[in-house]
Amino acid sequence: KAGVTQTPRYLIKTRGQQVTLSCSPISGHRSVSWYQQTPGQGLQFLFEYFSETQRNKGNFPGRFSGRQFSNSRSEMNVSTLELGDSALYLCASSFSGGRYEQFFGPGTRLTVL
Amino acid sequence: AQSVTQPDIHITVSEGASLELRCNYSYGATPYLFWYVQSPGQGLQLLLKYFSGDTLVQGIKGFEAEFKRSQSSFNLRKPSVHWSDAAEYFCAVGSTGNQFYFGTGTSLTVIP
Image (cartoon, rainbow over all chains, first blue to last red; front, side, top):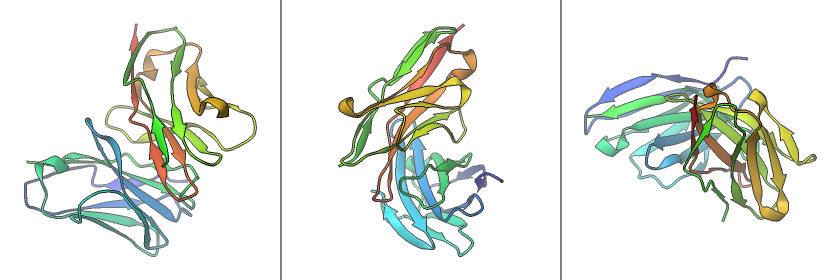
């Protein structure tokens, strides 16, 4: 089985711009979660989607949004970028979420200048 | 509330020495527990998991972990560390509320 893929791998944006990140889960997985990872904050949970519905949401401002398509692929959008949004954004897929192990993609490294 | 604590932010060991990384969790029901490893600039790779049954679980790369319910712990061990084990290690708990909780991670440095 192919693993979780994320595109793009690297991204450079300027303050005020918006960005869209993409995640393709493992075939058959219906749950996709997004995390922000920074050196000072560790792994911060953004949100989780299951069957095209947002099922859980972390404590991030409304500038961070996401969606999931019928094929389970997911996108994450950040509007009005701030310098503090520079981070590694990780996507993880799981068969049904919750208690089951998550499989991570390589991440998208976002740099905001 | 569910939480995961990794009390050691950074650990340094000599190559060939044994390793133990600590993890404590707070969870009301029987937890599903995981250890992940992350190499620099990479995603997380699952090392091992505990769902139920034998409290000593074996994982990849020679790692094992022991679930101790009385201590709410799930410590990761390896009898002999290799230089390639240098990485960041994360403990996590999966909940029935469809959420995954990660610890803050332990950075491992291996001295030749």
